[in-house]
Image 1: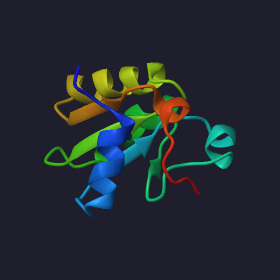
Image 2: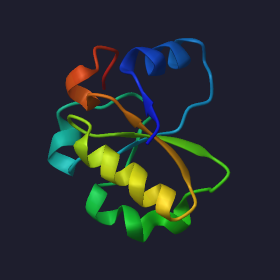
Image 3: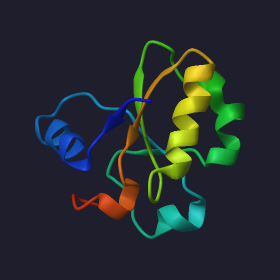
Image 4: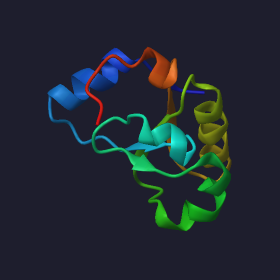
Length: 98
């Protein structure tokens, strides 16, 4: 499974690189803070939302600690999508939140 550090994501955001983040936490968790510009799709709904995603786009998956986002990466890869897991999830994120 591909992984990316929070610092690498923060650098890409600072450099204004196109980035596609999907937060797979539950709604209550996202309400406590999320990375600006992230798309929220709870892990339990991700399989039902695959048709809304583009197989040509690379996604970075985010959760609280990296476990659920790891499962999300596996799900996407199993269906032919490109995805990377944010190591440590929001617990490791020290960048901007909204």
